[in-house]
Length: 560
Ligand code: GLU
Image (cartoon, rainbow, N blue to C red):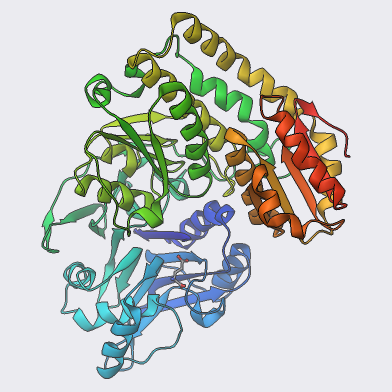
């Protein structure tokens, strides 16, 4: 899922579209493109190079107009190539391009729709699932683009955010959201669309967050929104315009080489901000309704994806040991599709940095549809869909996380989950006053403790250098440190492209030990706790096979 920007204005919007794409570049992409309504026809330019290249291309080719859309693509269907890059066009019966469309997400029934549209004579130029939407809108178009998109949406299965315009309606762009984020930007006599408000920073701070199923009609200085109803049809709806001081993508890196490094070093501040104002443990930390929502719960179900699921898994150890609450952690994309046994006395906790994670939102809806109405989200974006959908919310104060690989969001989620554990333990009479005071003291010490870990950067860099030639790595942990090992393996995979796996250390002897030799670095999360002795035996097993151990403990041990 990548980036969308769109605009309807009197002025040339190509610089705004390109600037918007640049602000979304940090998300990564493999190709990009822009299309405009120029001289009575659709024009586009696309590239598999950087957005800066696209910008030069657009200016050389003289692409300039007041209505247009732009996209950065992360290929899911069809190779990263110019002919698969968005915007996609659909050509009318007279051989003239009539519809231009960009899309984030995946259309699940694209095969069926493609066959149907091919039978009607539409010619496909790409391998993308996106192109079927362009042709479908064209097929359903009857002089009103807003209407055509509403009818097309009824046929689409999957997750999408789209922006589309039509040759026959020069000053109109239509957007739709289903499972992928999309916002409307309200300017002075002009309107904008983007997959993230950050893309519109400096253009407008008047933002409407579209809801799932919303379709928006953008015209010069005016807009209309319709919401999807239960039967798939749409009805007009008013959505609040909020003033959002979106952070500009050009945020200073300061002394750091990239955003991820910067964000790693922001952890002490992010944790301190998240704890700001927490003077004692009380349900109101999670919202006004918390006493009622927490009352009588007898279990917790955590729904999340990726890094957030690992913070959830850590919380399972806490919630069971400290609050005495049975806790299940489910990967959202599994939970939403499987048959499970609902219990209305469950507190459903969703965790998501953005609050827009499509699988987690769908899993939340699934849980509610099964009769579990007590919902809490732990999220970093107060204006997100997840916050709107849940009864309770705890907003982490990590600040904008630009790096796609989560860092400070993870640690602030852990802080929030620990506060939740303490709150539920207190409500259940399992947290004596002395315990509460000690826990708060320890939490307040956390920023400086993290600071001292960050001071180990030179040693960590030396470790990283040793990892460069490696193909594989193992991460080991025990107890609540096992999820931390999982998170470590995920970071190594997504950032270094080195295959990594995490195991509870006790599992080593049940198979993975066979993989350990001198070429296999083994990272061990080994804080000085009651499981350290057990972990030491596991480390002996690794050494016996010539494995290279990298041990993080209280402080860092030298390489052994
Ligand atoms: N599924 C679409 C494609 O492969 C959109 C991918 C995206 O979200 O960038 O072109």
